[in-house]
Image (cartoon, rainbow, N blue to C red):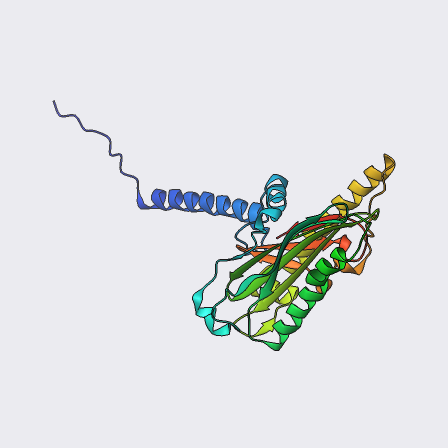
Length: 280
């Protein structure tokens, strides 16, 4: 008896239909992932992507102090030609003091020097001296008013950009504690300071996205100060209308491992240790 089995081969038209359906499914999945993580914007950051959760952002912010290693990281020796002194690192500790004097003061500082042959960097080093180093002698010369002063710094090189951050915590007598944070960003390849706007452009970070992150952090800080004020505490109150929160006015930022830390250290100009950090 002859048995004829059914022909299971699909005709060409059916195969094409199936192929189109599969391609549409793949394209849909890709579109969902793109919208979720990038929202159609170009965001090139190693440490953070737009689609990450607040938990991830908070981790990056919490780890900020860990970046203050008192040395330079990720240094490429090709930049040795930029050095002022070949025997020292591109950034090194120029002032180190760990001293206490009874009821007068306690000092623990490591303050950097940027070892780059440049008139611009010379001005930066003068600013570091007047802001952080001169304070050491000022505190030592003040008697009968207990003061504490600590300074740490971090330095990092990526894509030809040298980024330096210095954090000081100061309390003098009965005055409120201040946290002062200053940053310096220098384009080693073009021998010039690099602005926040230029760094965003260089790293292809969308300005609107950066502004969103800044606004969110300022709002969180403002809500926190309102909550503390309601409980009877005195705390620095943010003015969300202040122009310092605009991307074009950002002065203090630190570039580390692809992540840009935008820093609002209100103690730079006031007696407060309040700090807001936006991460992009």
